[in-house]
Length: 195
Image 1 (tube, rainbow, N blue to C red):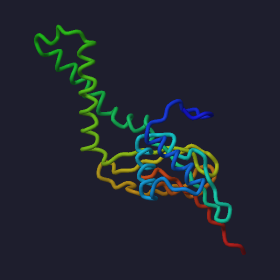
Image 2: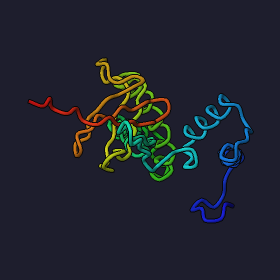
Image 3: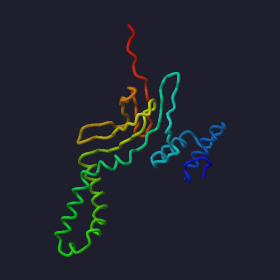
Image 4: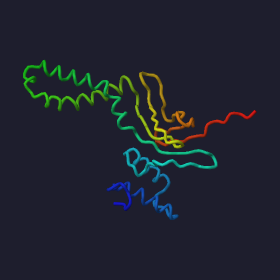
């Protein structure tokens, strides 16, 4: 337990990460740069709040600000609902038509059918509609306006692969989002030429 932290327990990798950060601040090195980057990426993929920077860091000289977004858990699950609902309904209708099965409690059938329908919905969505879907969300590093972005293809139409660019609706800064690291970097809006 880290005093002053809102996290109660840290796993082994999170403890190792924090120790490496503290050692680096003292001028020591516990991990090589590659080991540190790999550990940080592993923690990000696990959804650890330790390895993500939820506060923007800006460089005054260049005007570039950076922040780490997170995987939008809700939106990443909701994309499967259009297939899940009909599959579950179909499962319940089919079980109602099978003699002997209709005598089983609907709650038990729902308990069996829901996970099966969810897995089938994930497979159907990923194979027929979406390719490699990922939705990231977080604040703009300049103005904290909440935003989200979708990586992947939809119905064969190519979407963002590794890097995405978008414009913040509030401050009009260009945001560059990295799929693999979830890092967002902003560039100041282009100034109009002076006359």
